[in-house]
Image (cartoon, rainbow, N blue to C red; front, side):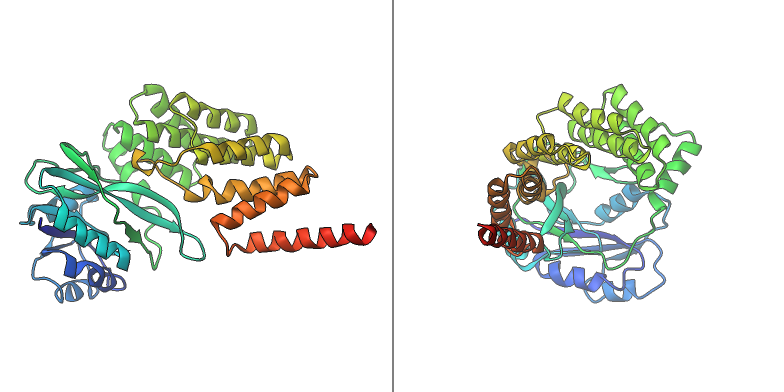
Length: 363
């Protein structure tokens, strides 16, 4: 069995740290906590689980803090978590099995990161992250914001997932502030940093600035394919916010220059036509989404609903508005197969039933 050091960086996490550590402490062989300036009970809570607690002066650099936490690890693998992450029961079991069976030649274990959920707790947004990194192999974190370890050697894709459950909002301006400070200091952003800087500008409603960053990122042609596709989508969102509808659509089609269609993009194109009340065209793109093969291991951001429920429910509405109630009902039932407890599905059934009764009455 391989051994694992859990390595965390924390600051003022008294509301979530115990929940996190309760879900994982019995599965790891060592816990390293690097505190970057807590003024609450964070270190007191951490002390209930480990003696390996270290202070680190925060300098607006997540990679530096994570590398510090890894530097204190003594086990075979280092695993990172944020304080508002948890291991659900099934994932705990899967993780333990992984420890018992993992080939020691593996350098990096990739695992799903679940970060978005619907009202029933089902995953609506996820992506793979490097979760276990073999210790003392020279791999390190890079990037002051949206830090990453570039995997080398043998990579293994695991089935356990880490679930991200925030209990409070984080500082919404922190990431943008760090990027802008770097730029003010003369730093030239690498392609990945450009991509995430553009996203931060989008989140802050700096549409014109974001467009410029995304355009430079795409024109330089040095980005990873999944980031290229996502940059096109965010380019489209910015154009839409600025009222440039045709440019927004063109940006979505631009994604096809990088790889085969993604269901997420097809649903965005479907929505563009749907909002123009062009239901035939919208139906085409929602149907196209249903033909896309979901591949979480490609590493991009994945919205599971786009591979089933969302296009089905939208096809139901499209065909209803086109006057084809038989098709509309069929797609509503397909949506029900994806989410049997969907309020929208049940509402549509009620509407279809009422329409059927009205037709029978008239007959």
